[in-house]
Length: 205
Image (cartoon, rainbow, N blue to C red; front, side):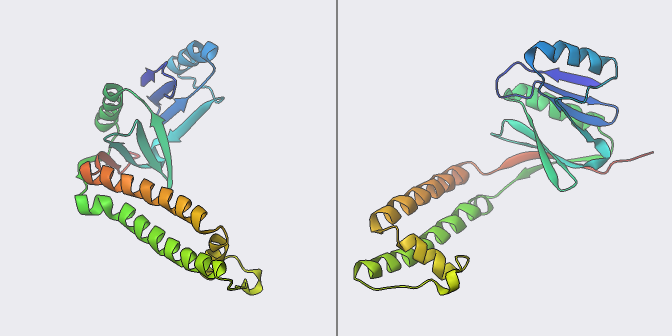
């Protein structure tokens, strides 16, 4: 059994590993000591607690720059929020050495792979902007467009709706989106993703 406690504002207040379960809890401040006592006496409370059975867990990730440890289980993801880097490393190392059936690896993403998502996002933004701008310029010249069957799920109808916002609003909206994508590109290019990963093949015996 291992219990970690944090009093930092954005952290999970209690993280614990016991009875083949990973727990996190955020009880009211005046109840934390009672929660810790219950845990130490092998009687985890249910209120304000979230528990993941170890045999559900397939992967645990510690990514550089992220203030949490990611636990992947049955297609879902839960974050154990720990702002202090030393504490994050301590918890991850404990899992690494105390969870059976783990295979450790360090994943280093290439610059090319790292920037792929923001590049795609910038491409989509440019195409959507130009298509919407074409409609907006047409409206400004007096052209009329119709929404076929009032179906707003089609791309043409989406561009029509955006074009109706006007050239200035389009420039502001898409300019902001492109700026966000560009900043993401620069950040990911300068510092590609690096993470420590535990792949878990849980053993019941």
